[in-house]
Length: 124
Image (cartoon, rainbow, N blue to C red; front, side, top):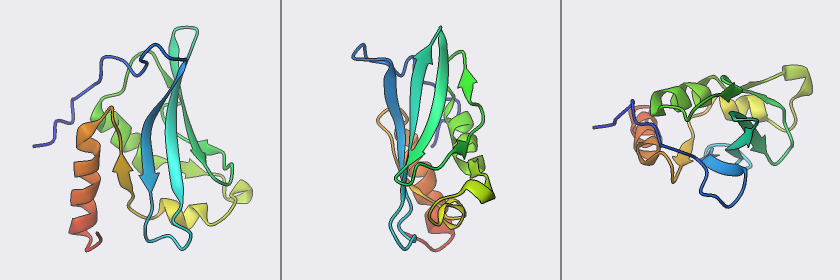
């Protein structure tokens, strides 16, 4: 059973102000695109940033938050991620239309959620 309320106590292990939250891989993409979501701490707030190989400027919600996100909030962030069409590099719009495979050390149920979603759409 997936615990959508799960929320890690922290993202940061003391080694720096940045942490990888999740790596998303889109296997159906022609190029096997990957998007990584990072958390950075600035002035007591957590700032979120999505990064891909092409340097696209992703719109994610929330962009910043005062605490770690619940699993449900992270899933919503991933599923509503977007780019401005006139600034998109590569085929990122097609990539975002897909269902990713997800890896996260901080959110162990995230992989299960997306695996189940992919399976329900006949992917995997």
